[in-house]
Image (cartoon, rainbow, N blue to C red; front, side):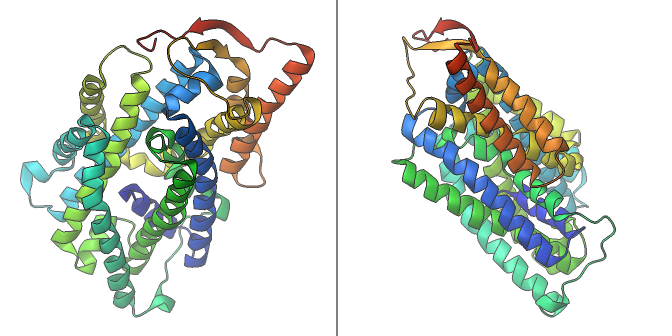
Length: 397
């Protein structure tokens, strides 16, 4: 449950009816649950992170590119969330002076978010156990007050100035967790079984993420504004809303930074904690500069560009290697697996230019089929599809 989902819901409310919003939320989160469940199950079975899995699917050196993409994407998300934090504080306390100005609040908020990521998974879990139930209660209470404010569900209405199609709405919803669904192995590697991982992702996507997007949409519809903090102030939630929004943004962002540090540790020989500090401070500065202003464009881009990577990981593990992966010292990897990059490019192009269907799902399926198909052709024609081999050493490089 991430506050960015509430803002996405508010964005949907500006261009869709309530029925269309519900349909976009349902389909979008089912897409997320599908490929997030498949990637998460891989993590549960292998016990390794997403960047480690990429060594098999993309090659040892090819995985460095994937790690860099993950890092840049997650740093971008951290920056967006830090910007949301600053915006929330300023909206709640516009007369707070220097410390409640958007860039300054984004800065000290980002520093808070760095702390739990610095302590790793245990820090994230501790904060989430406190913040997520509170966010759920806030969302329920916000929906109740919003509906009461307009006099019932039938009175929810809005003036649509920039219509959003169902397909565009689905892509936007997928964008709220496009990266998170791919990097499920970062967390699901701790799951006791793949079944547990599947249950978690289904509840997390279809129910939790779906609900949080819906709550943002209803709150915005009832108040007539997509400015979520302002809408909550109008409803009368005030200080409690600020505390919960802060905590929820915090839990979202420490996970972003945690996974970004895992990705970068696949590239540079520096301890994860040092990476967390350096990347966190850089991303905080970017967030303070106003990256959050481009959230919708960011979500749409992610909703098309990231799912193909999931398709490649799924095809490589389930179809090509038949669920048989090996990791650790002494393991031999290809340096670059060229079909993976060809499939990624074609997946993005398919999602961008094919006019029918759901672009996020189209890009995933095209990448999956191309990656698998190239290996089938390669085996039948004895065509070499990889560049060289490299041996995994004790230090992981």
